[in-house]
Image 1 (cartoon, one colour):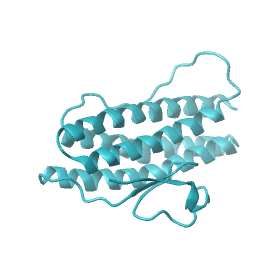
Image 2 (cartoon, helix red, strand yellow):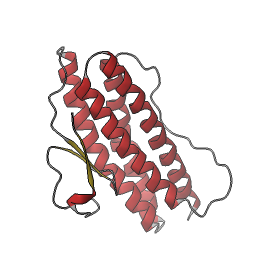
Image 3 (cartoon, one colour):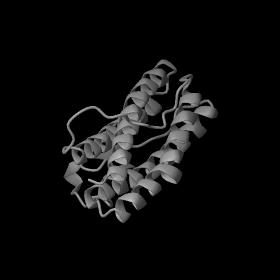
Image 4 (cartoon, one colour):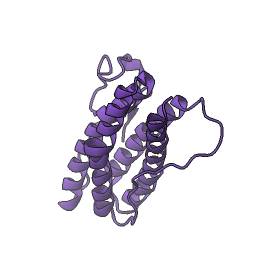
Length: 183
């Protein structure tokens, strides 16, 4: 793997790993504030971030040793409204800056596996941002978010509210590869 794409992959792994842990902590806070659906949403999206990190990690199987991951991470957790604000900002960064750049570098360098991994994450982060915005609007209005089942593709992390699609729009996996997070 070419060095620029490799470093981008290491950075993406770091960012997705941190998002996974951050969202699990945010879920605990949401439960404390009696927002069980927001907590469920954070847990579902944490699983998707775990899947992204794993996909990125597998792309780095050629490495042997320690490497520094430079990743944007939101710090300063607070109440659920603030945590949703941090989550939205993180997803926005991945959508507008991180993944578009990483995809173009991987494409330019002919790194097809890395490009695919970045594209799957990018496509998923768009959905995460929408779901977090919906949750923030509800929480800021003083109520828990109304949320159906949250479905996560265990292959690429694609996340959708409601019924799982027959075929994942990102990785083309069948409906059976989705895990439902239900109340």
